[in-house]
Image (cartoon, rainbow, N blue to C red; front, side):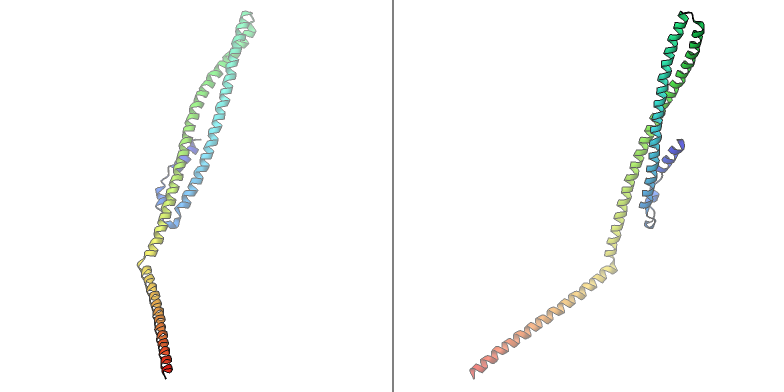
Length: 209
């Protein structure tokens, strides 16, 4: 029991900041997820042990109640045997009475200790569940940090001077290409207009003749 508590305590209280500061290539998220899974298994083991301790406490209480009943029973029998002057029966009843009284004392001590132990185990179990929840929160923090870092990395890549300059160059080429098309269209339009005007002029000259 003590070893298990020591293990879970050491696991849960480990310094997660070391994981958070690791290089991205070492995948700290995977480390933390594995860490949480191991702690979950340990907490499940502790839960079963706490439940077992509760069963033991119930068994002790059951034995204690039976022993108390036997004490009362042998007391009555002892008194009856003495009243009826049955020395042998009285002696046997007294012998068992003493044994049951010793057992009651022993079981009372065990019951008190079992109650204290169970309270301690339950408190520890609650603490462990809280620590496990802390791990979940830490994991969320890590995921958030990782996402922000990757997002910034992508933004920095887009905003790099070389990439921006390349983009600017591409836009300049595109703009120049569009301007050439526009000039050609405009020129063709002017030619077309000029030809049309001369055609009209030629028609007028022919009609005049």
